[in-house]
Image (cartoon, rainbow over all chains, first blue to last red; front, side):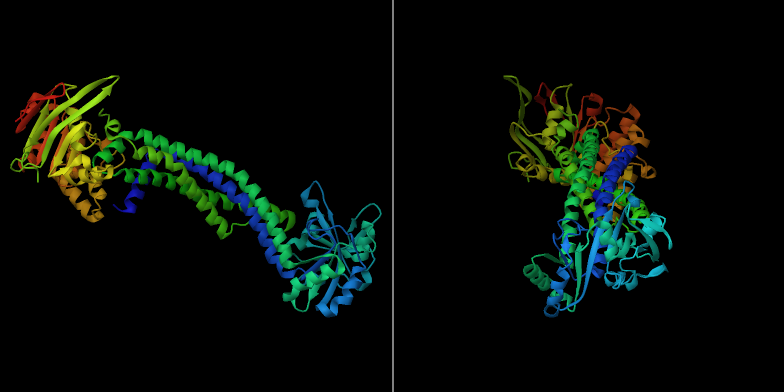
Length: 386
Length: 232
């Protein structure tokens, strides 16, 4: 007996009741698709951070509270720390130092949310994001320091309907004029509004304080050692790019687990549907299995046959789920592109393998009981010969 | 080889002290009283009224059920000393079955049904297809090879079942009321197909309650209330 024969028989067994098979496969399809879409969110965000921030972020980031406050820390670090860092710069190989103030402007309408990013106007946006360029208007210059001007990321400009010459209210007392709009970067920077450091400090009531100081090193490989030295000597938090990425990864893993937990409910329901369909097939074919056993099929053959049906059904549902998931991911990305200029969801090879693996596992687990029942049929009872 | 005490020229199937008792509450029901018998080559009809123990005997001969006492010997092998899988392999190698209801696999065509035992035995696809075609031709159904059982008449389906039973060229053919659901004309055609292997010297066991059908057999074994009352 060849495996291909078993698969063919299993396929024929499933097509005996095509509507029931199709409906069960659809159940799995929806369950797997929901899992794929849920988990693809983590994959997409992971990709954005790894490819974008990993490439352009500072070698070392100094702040007071590390990542405990998330991506945009409060401006609670005394700016005087830059003077201390300056003293160490020779020893530690610091080639540039950029004090940054960050403030998140949330809104009930997510598309209206933005990140205000203040940095010394003389250093310009390129001090932290080297690849950006102005699509219209101009970049920040030294003369802008303390002035009410802003350079806006492409997506922020689109969502907030800003153009060169527009006026943006930071709060009741502070408003700035847009002097430049950046070209799209396909990343988080598209959602930022860049302001001169002191302008944002004033608006936030954070004079003399910053959120973080971004450092570029002569030798980025020393980042870990430099971060440790700074943390020890200046009594501050100092993180490297890899700290940041592992922080993001840790956060995503937790959210992955939560999202997987939610999809697990759908998967369990799908698995029960497969078990039900296969078990009904076994009951309906009791006489047939009895005949197969009578003419010389081993119990293991019957077990394999039923298990193959279950696996095929789950695999068909899994492939369908992946395809539907791709459509779902495209829909999610269309939305997040509009919202933030990023692809928040991504179907990575490991997610594809996970979806197919889980489908097969589902098929295997769901098929175990029906397969066991079918292989343990008494021939005399199955053939009605008692 | 059968043991000398049971050996008959050309015989491959014998039972020794074979019985089957069923518990029924605190009592015991004797479905088959102990008996010893060597099935001669050719066709043996097992006759008896309903409930006489015919099906019990066939269940034991086929290894579907385990005896309370005794042995079923096929060419020297005691069938009931084998494991479940071992008995399945043994049936595949040595037995052919024809049931009252043809018991064809409904999702397989006539040709695929005949191929089935060959597939279980690991015969390569092309070879088994050729063999199955030849068998269907032998039962006069070559033109119906691609039909599903639901597209065949009762007689045709039973002939496909006979072709399937003959696929592995078995030494023993067990037929349980093979004409029970057929009209007399179709039944004759089916019986003709079963007498052919018997004439070739194979052991054909025909379970029937029809005396006319039994009269076609070379030998007769009568059963009444689980007791074998006459042989040969």
